[in-house]
Length: 224
Image (tube, rainbow, N blue to C red):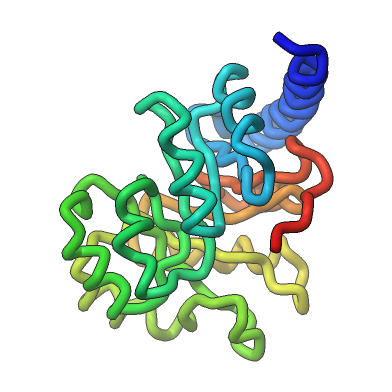
């Protein structure tokens, strides 16, 4: 193992330990257990080698926002690694995304749901419906909460849970609590919410999946 690789692995291990400690404390305070939560380590814009090192450290869930990155990294890891797509879905990329992603966190269109449903591996995937709690910020993606019943009724793929990116205009904990109530109302098992800056609040509100990147991998490099 090269010195630089060894140093990077030690850095990732130390950061991961800190995050796991924060998760453990929050879950303990909330009377929850670690098995209830999936930590998705977001490797977007980081080199494939980081995903390999994280796998060696025991991570099995990896998050990507771009199809080209996910398609490049997924073959490098053993089959027990699970890949989560959390970027804005583009219809023309659905065929490719379906080839490498096991979990789709950002479904927000019935048309896209139909395209995913036609993929050979659709039955083996989990889908989260992205909810936009900040209607004026359309660039964030997601459907309004008022459209959830219609989407659940018409979706050709089974919806496993709800996903949200905390709005900038409100306290994250309020948004997370609102999504938790919606999840319970519709009887869905999954709740994907919380990132490096707010995952503890998300866990307190019942998140089952948290998407953590910079707290583990460090400052994010730019990607053209």
